[in-house]
Amino acid sequence: MSYFAVGLAAVFVSGLTMFSGFGLGTLLMPVFAIFFPVETAVAATAVVHGANSLFKILAVGKHSDRRVVLLFGLPAILSAFAGASLLIVLSGFPVLLQYHIGSVQARITLIKLVLGILMVLFAMFELLPSLKKISFDRKFLLLGGLLSGFFGGLSGHQGALRSAFLSKTGISSQAFVGTNAMIGFIVDMTRITTYGVILFGIEQSNVVDNDMWPLIATGIAAAFIGVRIGKRYLDKITMTTIQNLTGILLFGIALLLGTGIL
Image 1 (spheres, one colour):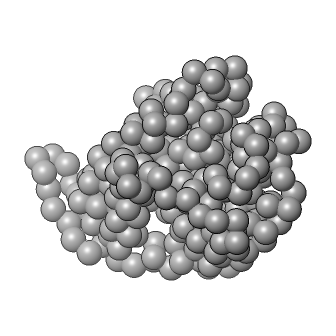
Image 2 (cartoon, helix red, strand yellow):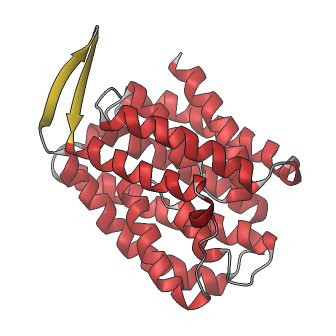
């Protein structure tokens, strides 16, 4: 069941992200969270997301705008480290509340509350018309890199912010997709490294243990298939469809996560 769920989610969402530049980490992390602790789910999603970004780089990376990658990507590296470090700190807090719903035992933790709140905020950006239209001038690229990198390191929710900042930079649609992939990969490598180094230092390097790697490999393979499908049918899926679907699922997942059911 876990392999089917992760594989299906990765194929579906990675295909959609070819156009939007975001969504894979947003929707795949909660799927991993069904089967593993939240901090483990974030780390596992980072590995799959990094592989997905690499696949997109190979497919469309040649169209990326190198100047935008540098202006946005360098500050994102620094803030991704900060966000990933905060994730590790939050994961060390004890359970705040436990209760039962029938046979289901729910556990509310600080990290689940934080991620749930973040998901609600990002869902609003996908669903509310006034927030959907938000974009930023090219002069705010450095700020965009800092914000996107930080939330990418903390929860994996980097793509929506990144797309909002990049959409008004005046680059072509091909350059937008390629630049998005390059920056996403940079942030993913930063947070994966941070998770590994910090957890190793506190003797918790098994946050992603050996039993989980086959599931991660399934996600990576499925994400590759999704990229191939998405590239082929790129012009048949609208941004509105992606935003609405992502937003609705985010609200539902945030509710389950914030109440401790996930």
